[in-house]
Image 1: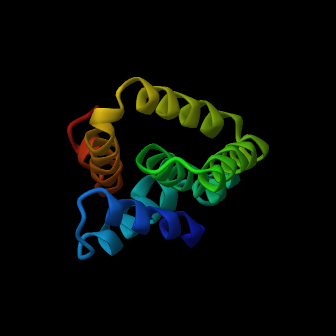
Image 2: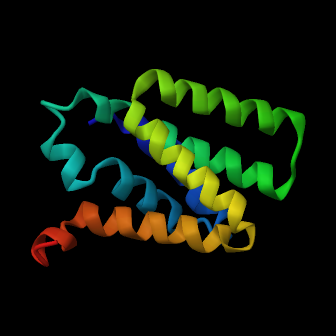
Length: 130
């Protein structure tokens, strides 16, 4: 799998809880999950998964301190996700709508996303037959 997915996941995980020590672990779990490693040969679209945490990071910064630069960066990242993979674009739209509807729960939403991604990466759901 491409290691670029963990690059935006590390600052995203750093901004949410406000501590830096779990950030590299979250980036590693997101990048090298068992799903990505197992499907690296047949699903080349997984090499462009870095757009999802990058968009969530841009949205997080846009909701905290809205500026023109973060708005342009968010729209540019969303366009790049659209160019790479339509499914990821749909997931980003859903995440963006949830963030817009519930901005007070932004930290909780992204934390749950990272926890679920990490658990899926560890194969917990597969062990539970989900």
